[in-house]
Image (cartoon, rainbow, N blue to C red; front, side):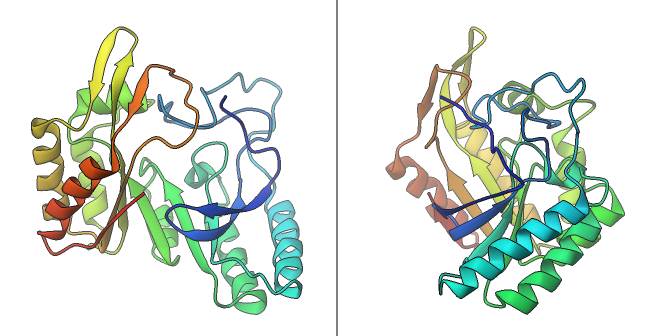
Length: 256
């Protein structure tokens, strides 16, 4: 069963990819707000936003994050990472840049060993302020689940005029200073076959990886409930084979 994050600060949880992670949710607490509607999202489908506060206030985020970091530091269990994720796309927040600035200051003061990570679907990186902000965090993690527009539309359900070419062009503006994250899966959705693990899919994806040459790639498959019940997890062995091809390009690749 999918589930929303019910507070601004959540966890800490043990992340498969990041370690002990304290989560930050900039989006609504009662409904998912995202410009993607991924068929595998643990938060479920986008909901009705009428009458719902769309974004959590900057001061509320700062106050609650400070309290959580003070508590964890006092307990001797500081987080490995402060992760911006939650019920949608964090870079949509109108004060995203200011909130990241607050977070970096709190991290430096209270838990200096912690990294700051942002999990993003990369839809907002065409905006200079978002790119500038993501360049300040330790782990700027950008999603690309396929090299093909049709597959992205099927898997990610993007709003608006999303294209892989435009997204890749914007990713190139980071000069490789980002982490690419890709979900591999197969199954069916809406009567159509879904599979981004085919040779055609992986070969095209690897060409983009080679062109962009990110500092790291993260590949993973299903681990939590999904809103689409007819999806299948890709085996770790398959993911390791994909990772080996990434590493053959001289790029570190983690498997989760």
